[in-house]
Amino acid sequence: MLELLLSRETDIFIWVSYLLSVAVVVFLSTPIHEFAHAFSAVKLGDPTPKYMGRTTLNPFAHIDKIGSLLILLFGFGWAKPVQVNSRNFANPKVGMAITALAGPISNVTLGLVFYIFLKILLRLGFLSIGIGFYVYRFISYFIQINVSLAVFNLIPIPPLDGSKILAAVLPDRIYYELMRYERYFSYILIFLIVSNVLDYPINILYNAVYSLFDLITFWI
Image 1: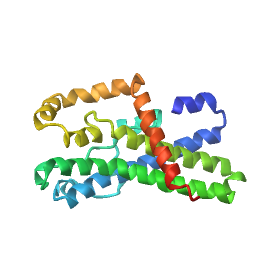
Image 2: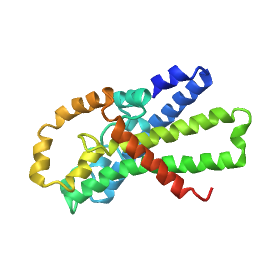
Image 3: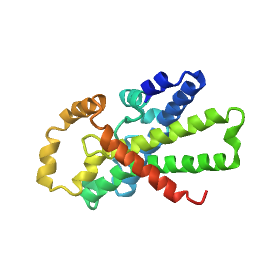
């Protein structure tokens, strides 16, 4: 995304708008994403995230350097994973799935809130004057990155949230067999990102989320 921005946009303020939106995502969206995981796990009976200091919105408890860099370069990445002990859940599979889903839901919710805010500003004409164009860019980038984070994390490849959601429907034998190779999936995932193989499925889900936003905000 950053490469596309630099190649097509020459206005330094547009570039700054993008960088500011990434900063807000790193210091707001990703902490909320991880907090949502931790909060859900604790509410479902697992105190592990609380003991690990993850039930906080302090960004420095959640930021991952490589994941943040990928957000800057590609528009999606990750934070430090929240450690969860599924044996503390009444139903380990369902508990893990709900805990995993909480993160992407938080990003979609943030995206929707700012989408509503953006449409209201547009409706009132506040973005047509002064620095309104750059405010529009900033909010748009923020929404786009949050949606991308949600969609990206739903991909069923370890260590992403989608793999834990997949565990709720896969037979234990097959899932545990896959988890034997979990450390290799991280390298596979990075390769898939760099090679753009994931672009097509991500774009399908990305557009679906935006269609949902339009449906929900039809009244604006």
